[in-house]
Amino acid sequence: MVAMALASGTQGRTRPRNAPSPSGRSGLRVAQTFEEFYAAHYQAVAVQIYVAFGDRAEAQDIAQEAFLRALSRRDRLVAGGDPVAWVRRVAWNLAISRWRRLRTAFTFLRRQRDEHVPEPSPDHVALSGALATLPEQQRRAVVLHYLADLSVADIARQEGVAEGTVKSWLHRSRKALALLLRDEAVEGEVRDA
Amino acid sequence: MPDRDQYDELLLRDTFERYRADELPAMVAPGAAAARRTLAYRRRRRTAVVAAAVVLALATGGGAALVAIRPDHHAHRVPPATSHRPSPDATSHSPTLSPRRSARKHVPDGRIGATDLAGATLDIPGWQSGGVCAGGTYTFRGGTGTGDGFDVYLPGNGRVVLPGPAYADVDGDGADETVALVACGAQELNYQAVAFDRDDAGRIVTLGSVARTPFVPMPTARMDGLRTDPDGTVEVRWTQVRELSPISQWRGYRWSGGAFTQVGGPAALPDPPVVRVTARATMSPTDGGYAGTLTIVVTNTAASQNPIGYANLKVALPAGVTVRSASPAGQCSAADGAWWCTDDTHPIGPGTSWTVTLAVTSTAPHQPADRTLPGTLTLYPVPSSFCRGDTGDTPYSITLPAAD
Image: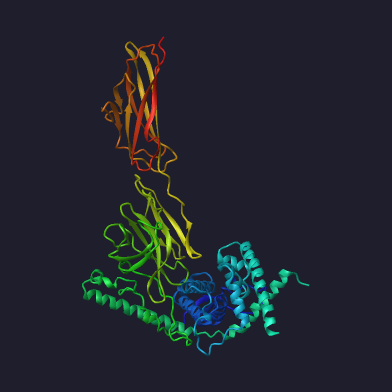
């Protein structure tokens, strides 16, 4: 087993809102094995990629590739920094690169899938679709904030921008997303009626 | 009653919470063990490919022979045969492949060796939209690609010295990409740093242009250095051309938002030197007319950052004025009806000057109709291509004092 200085704790919905971010630097205090690190963070990273880019299988592949690269570069990760943030960033960049090459952000609508893969729910499609209307940085900020539970300060540090910039991104994104999601909810109610 | 912002915030939090609650359990993880197996597999595969390449190179008499014997019809965009990376076939059978797909892919490592690059067909971003050094697809052989009346050069070509490729994870995807310097031109050379990657099939693709020299008739800069930082920054060394003691500078670039932008180093190379020439005459009446000195100062101004090698100075004297001697000795001589001065042993640095003094006489009468005698100085700084200021003709005059 190779010990890695990785964040402890599970990134999840049960963490109190005001608790320190598990992916923040304050979380780097317990040495984890790669297996523990993987188990604690794989699903969260994959879900973040899925919601932002809309293809579950691709998101799983990308998250796996990002963790694999973390494993191959564990010496560098041990040396310092935030391993979760590193994996998340690599996953995002892989996703962006892959989707740019495919020239579409939502390939699941056109791709053939195996039968046992569940269809995404309309709500989830709506959320991914609404996110796709955002500029790349805003989309990432929204996912990091609402899904990865990162604070504004954490996002600002990871993105290398001022906290005010992140607040501005989130404010604009919130208005744009809420508008789209409200419209979607109304349409859904009309369909269901 | 919440206001609209609070309502939006609640709506988003609720939407994301439901998304997370639904999707987190459904997101099946291939597992850490699968990641370990894939990594081991890739490393074994890489080792095997390297070993095979070494054997093949030895069998064919060296790596250079591999390029020489490659048939022309193989010079299309394909994963190079000598690549140290796994082949697309190999990677498509990665042990961590999700069970949901029969042929999954990973993003291959984009490290491309100089030899592979020098024999590939590549998309090269252009320096201009058409004509010489336009962008397009070029087939390289031995590091040289041919356009319509011009050539494009990669490291390893036989004409232009370009440092070898550099590697770094420039786009933050966890795998390295390749950055290479490219030169292009029919006569004058233009330079560019270009980042290359591999696509999912292992083919070389162009990620983007890191930086390029401006396309102008007389380029003022070249690129002659390349290095990368572990954080993905690409550093390119820009160097002046046609300057004595050319100045070099490193500039850093980062991939951001689908393009490279400069993040470090100077924005521009120093401006060319600015030279000034002045003449001052001191004349006194003599028995037969006037005698005195004409002092000429050539200055490489403090605004310059480059020295000029030397200046050729032509001194056209006013009518009736002759030179009796010149100092420093050996720097001036008469020819073609003028005096020519030069000192090609001492470069003129920024903020410094070169001075010559001519002892002159005039046969003008002591009560001349016009006491101002016009002449012309002509300055030819070397190197001269970009010097600004008093190059060419500069008028001057010798003023004769009134006699008692």
